[in-house]
Length: 390
Image (tube, rainbow, N blue to C red; front, side, top):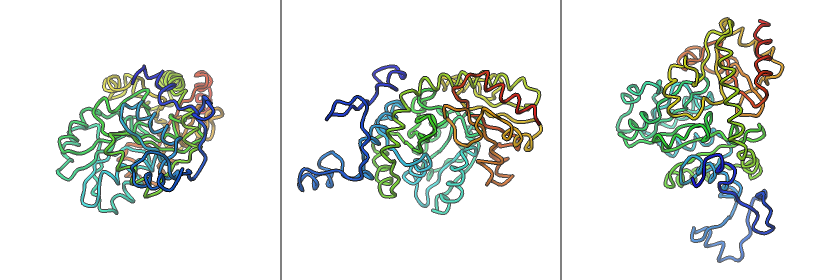
């Protein structure tokens, strides 16, 4: 990056309108692009000339978003897709084929879990699930046909932290790729490439866009991999709408400010929850009680904006909390300006069996809080009144 990340978030890959001089990039809401003549059309289809053909194959808005996230993550290329799940599916399908083996952490977003367990296995790709915070377990699981290791850190929803550098070293010994889902941290708080990751994915729906009005996905990596991912994305039609790319770019400009406020709020709330008599345990990487606190301090700028905590009275207490908050919004997703709260066992991970939940370390009373940018005292007061009602 040419500047500090706060400046790159605002100015990096800025595109003004070359025709009118408009400072804000226009929305190129078009399905197709006009050629000057048939020869130009032929050159573009043959790849002999740059330029746009059809929005499924490329669009100025989606390209600008991909390039900006790539710059912020420190990679040379990026690709946008219609959702975070599309970006993860793309990574797996490009990195592995029937007969190959992948390793996936046992604690991941519910949609990722369903994708891996219900679809990827049916394609003849061997999948090993394990606790990737145990680097030795990852080393024992990898083998000559391992092509990909996929982790989230911090993990969703338990906030388990995984040593990216250690897993990268193990992965590269087998000539495999390491993909890190960096949705929770964003490049402002953590850059997995600095620790050896080969690919980084984002559900740009969350902090990248930041306002709860977009569904989008981004993957970034080295050019050779992204070129293969582009081919898959265009074949499957995982296209991001230009308006969504434009909204994500607009939201991205305030990422540093939003993350600073969200992370400061989250730390204060985590410290308060840790003292509350109704709370069994608080999971937040920058609490000294977190088992990977020292690791989190090494690889993260901050603890992030997500907190997980366990209600002493379990499942029913978790559900009751959902029904009694007034300021916090009962909703899935995260990374919004608003504080969002959810109960994984009865919501996002409700489709998982009891054993699967326990294997993923999701207890019946676990609550996930995506801390917004409101005044921290108002969030605390709302949580306190709701907790006291059960």
